[in-house]
Image (tube, rainbow, N blue to C red; front, side):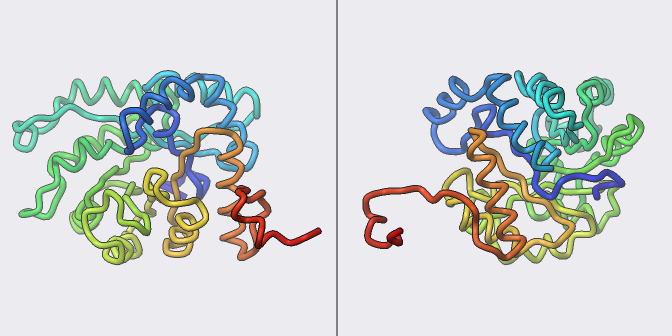
Length: 279
C-alpha cells in the first residue's frame, strides 16, 4: 500500500521499453528501433498484467508508452496503476525562488490526464534540490502540495540516499521513495550495506530500481539479493524487452519469495552437457 493505493510488489520498469539502457549508445538505439513500439510493449505488459503485476513506473509522456498501457488494459481488463516520474524545470534561482508553479501545474495536469496515480518527480528534479547543509529538499513542499491537490499521491525519485533521510527528518509530505539498490552498487553513491540500512529505516515504503544493475547482473542473482534484503512493504522495479523475459522474472521472483526451485527453462550451451541429468 502506498498512500492508500494498492500496488503490486513488483513494478514494471520502462527503461528497456524506451531506450535508456545505461550501457551503450548502440544498445539504446537497438531498443528504440526494435522495442519502442506500441504493440511490442503491450505484448510485454500483457504478461505482467495477467500475472497480477499491475503497476508501472516511468515517464509516461514518452511515446508510445501511454498508448501501449491502454492497449494492454483493453486486452486484459486490468486497470494499470501508473507511477509517474516527470521532470520539472529548474535552474540556480529555483533553490531560492521556488519552481515555476504555472509550469509545474501544466506538467502535473498532464500526468492526471494520462491516468497517473502516484507522482514522483524524477531524480533530475529531486536531487538538484537536496541541501546537505540544511538537511532538507528545497522547494519540494510546494510540488507535493500541488500533487495532492490534483488527487495524486506524492513521492520522490532519487539517486541520492540523503533524499530519503532528509525527507523523513523534515516531515515532507510524501508517501514513497524511489531508490537505487542492487548487489553490485551500480549507480549507488554509497556502499550497498548503507543503502540497505537507509531503506530499512525509511518511514515510507521504498520502490527500489536497478535491481539487475541495468542488465549487468543475471536475474537469479540480482533478484535473490533484492527480494531478500528489502522489507515486506518495499517494492522491486524491473524492466524487460520481451514477453518471455517478463514471464521469467515473474517466475524467478515468485520462486524466491516462496523459497522453491524455479519453474523455468535454463539456457543451454554445450558446456552444460556434462552436468545435465540423463533422462
